[in-house]
Length: 216
Ligand SMILES: Nc1ncnc2c1ncn2[C@@H]1O[C@H](COP(=O)(O)OP(=O)(O)O)[C@@H](O)[C@H]1O
Ligand SMILES: [Mg+2]
Image (cartoon, rainbow, N blue to C red; front, top):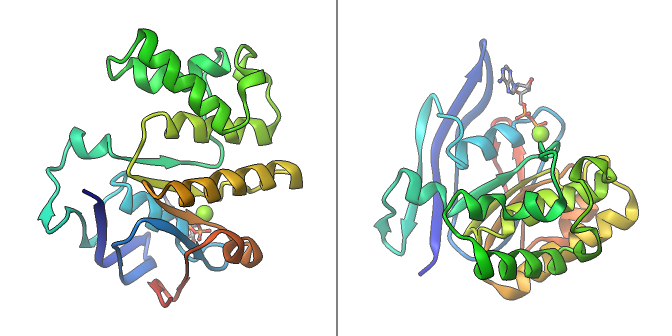
């Protein structure tokens, strides 16, 4: 069963600065949604609210399993993940960074190793597995952040500017990871970028956030 997300009539202000105003969208199909818009238009705010990390002033974020509301709380939080641009990696090896999310969920031993290895391969990091994550280049670090999210096998993956301040080569690798997720068809990806060309390259659906709303 797939997890559907509906944002309904979201308002959000910070100190009298209204960022989102009656912002709604239904994310009902697996695939890659790319949210674009000028700097400061509210993309990151919208993602944090959808990922349940921040509350809207008004409106609702609903997760549905088919037609039924998904039970909220930890169970739901485990099915969705937000990857931020400056992901705080831990002072430990790449593979321990990636398996961390499995350890705190009580998954260890063979299963943890297999899942970690397979995600490291998927993100092109197998050769870096024993390196301390804090010594990676920013492009590699961003891939570790994505690997850390993917190992949990989220149904909805939020990526906030996944290629901001990253060179062309790593941008290409990250776009490929996103395109492979699209092919696997098991994850809904909702990502932001201010790069329209990138949006067209990876998206099933490009959305524009303008005037506090998704105008499509
Ligand atoms: N925690 C916060 N406190 C105050 N203002 C904020 C906060 N988060 C975001 N903003 C403001 O909200 C607006 C939208 O920010 P953001 O969602 O980060 O835009 P985008 O990701 O599209 O660049 C900006 O003007 C930003 O300064
Ligand atoms: Mg942003």
